[in-house]
Length: 139
Image 1 (cartoon, rainbow, N blue to C red):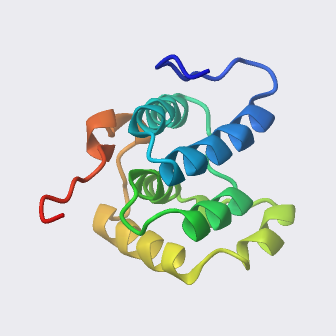
Image 2: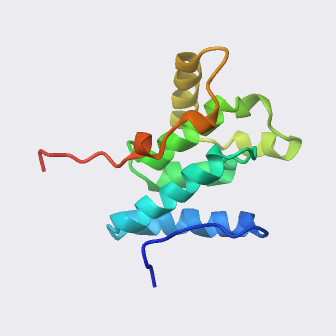
């Protein structure tokens, strides 16, 4: 049962992250904004730390396939990849996975990297408030 808190335990963070991404997608589909917000806060905390963690290629494929174009988690993924220049630091096994990344992700990534310039700020400078859900007032 969801109690308003989401966090990742040290250790098997990879499996927890994959389950959390699936939970985020489910929360989006079932319109559970509190859970989405809590998970997004956990992602912001995780990615803004000193670790060099970033969303994996297969995760980005799933998120872009299942979330709305303006979802804040998609923006966070793009920002993490842009600030860490992840596209230039792919491991060998990731290079094959990168070929399945959606074109819309690449476009957003290149635009964001261009916007940030040669010396992007660290991910730690981004605030959780930067990724609040946008609310439409026109229905």
